[in-house]
Image 1 (cartoon, rainbow, N blue to C red):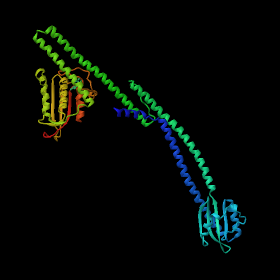
Image 2: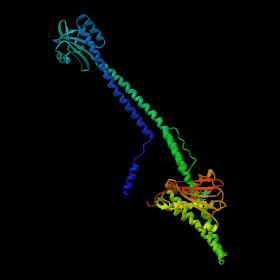
Image 3: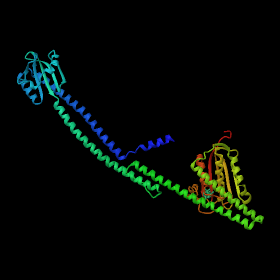
Image 4: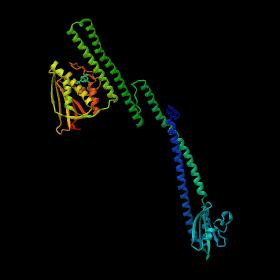
Length: 473
Ligand code: ADP
């Protein structure tokens, strides 16, 4: 008990999320993630590319200047030209005196922080490209007026960094714009979906109030269209089931009323009229017994249908002698032969065994024989056969009558509950309109093939295909 209460509480606490809220969150989260990802990737790619380009440029300028060392005039001019493009070139003697440019002053950038690297260049021709304190350097040891000097070419990365920073700001603004657009799109989109769901939920409420005219017709999205189809299907099934319940109630009460009225009428007749007349009394009592039997049959049929419907009666498979079972049922109909002039023609193979629920199969065969007797023609003949197939693996049971037959359009209907072909027939066995439905349910539960072949004016043949099994199984 306690744990149940706990579970209920947990269920209560978990509040369902709203679709629009969730969609909004996911959209915005996605937009933020994408923006951040693009920014990071952009930053890595751009700064690396810029730096690599700067290194290449500095190196090529360094090589160019090295070539110009032979001509001091050309050297000065090249230094000024490069300075205009943001590249500083210095020529320093080995005792740290700046040889070029002539207008050098400390503000142009000292050499102290790269002195160690310069010292490492021991021989003429050695060079190195590196990054230090926000600059890219190309340093080399080169010969100038017959002596080794240090050449120092530097380029400040601050221009690159400024560009990257500006781009980042733009990207950030774009990101904010994207998030805002994502918010708008998600709002429009989610309101479209939720309005569809809301309409469906309203329709479902109408369905719950038994308004079967309600239509679920949302076809905007595949999933909602599928849900609409399912709900339309549910509506049809609920309606069918309700119709069936109403129908069954009407039919059962109607079918109960007739025999009950008869029983009451005949009992009164015995009491008031036939009491002392033995012959009359016997006749009247027989009517009461017949009507009581009919009532029992009806109640049993209704019970069978509801049991089969709810599947509570599991099948009890076993191997049994089908020949004997069929003969046993034919014998029960013997009274028709004796008292009412019926001809039951049989063509039955001996000792055929099958595997099924014997009691249920007996119910099926009984129903089919009863129907054939009810609906056969003037000659009152019913043909019953049980024949094995050529390979001996199957056995076909069939009951044929010579009645009016069943119209093609009614062939499928007769298996439905309470379906009765309009026309009346002579009925030695009282029917309830449930017989064939029970037959169908039982045979379907067994997964046996069955059917009816019928021709108007020539009669009908109901058949079942049983598996044939050896007797010792
Ligand atoms: P019922 O109790 O009315 O016989 P069933 O479910 O057994 O109910 O049969 C349903 C309907 O199918 C019958 O009312 C009858 O119209 C038709 N039907 C069944 N068997 C035959 C048959 N052998 N020949 C003609 N019609 C038949």
